[in-house]
Length: 104
Image 1 (cartoon, rainbow, N blue to C red):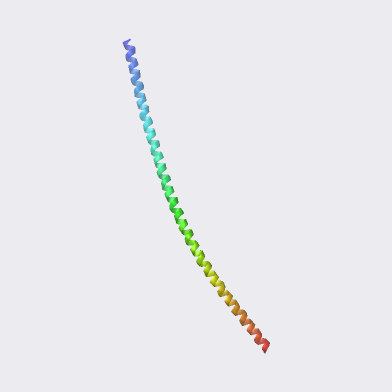
Image 2 (image 1 turned 90 degrees about the horizontal axis):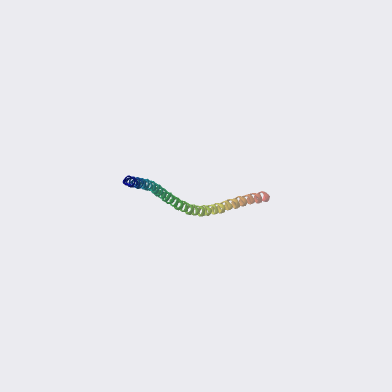
């Protein structure tokens, strides 16, 4: 009977050792998984920061482009007026030349 008790005690020690070993393996695995999750979260945060910076840059660029478009529109309107004046001057000179020819 004492042999069976000692065998049972030995089996319990082996089970306890196996359970502790499994728990250590599980803790090590969970630590690795936690590190992976932490690294992924950090990379995601960095990516989001970069995306936010790019969005701010594009927003600034869009505002600058809008200002340039307004300036260019003003320039084109001035050029159109200038071309209209040149056209009117050309037509006036042509009409004057025709009138002079007719008067001869």
